Length: 264
Image (cartoon, rainbow, N blue to C red; front, side):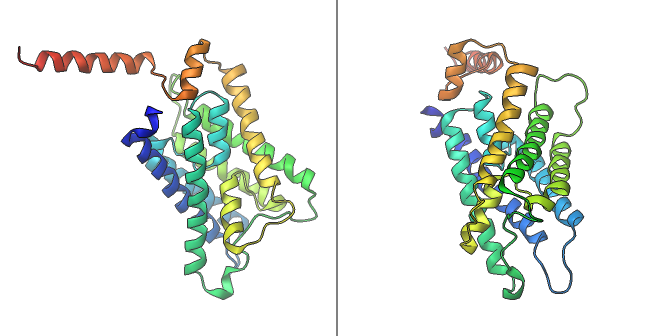
């Protein structure tokens, strides 16, 4: 349990709350139907994509900037983060989404709020069809996140924040026609709570993104680019007690320096 008692952990959880709040506020705000001008598919897609790209650039080094319960759960399935970090991140993201949607609701004129751009099945899309769409769109997003942030990659990787932002944007360019495009349970949950409107197909926006992200995690971390780790190390990661060789060496050097500076 030592992991959750650190200041770094508290900062990371707060950042997940804050970044999800901002993401939901900007994303939903771009999709509001103002009487003077209806939003275009391109506008909404760019807003969601640019918001994610900006937030990953701003907060990625603090929490990893998951900003998405499906991504956090997929990192856990891929044995990349601890169980407690997964739990705290998901709670922070859901609360952040509710806060972001609530603030947007409060500052938006009553004649423009509408249903606050909640996700819904569009154009006669069935729940089964919507589920497959959400799985595929979230799969490509999660795969992009895992690949672009993998510190084992050599050579020029490009800008992870830009890559992830574009991945979110391209998902919206397709997904809006089917479901309004979720790819993120928090994005769907926040406005549904605020406007108190949960459709019978709301489960699609949880199951689809989580399955898609977990499929990508299993494929990437266990088949395409697996980590060679023993069982004890994998268990340590789940518990939050794992230290990589690099971290151990850094701590050893710091202890060595402190001993050298300590007078006899």
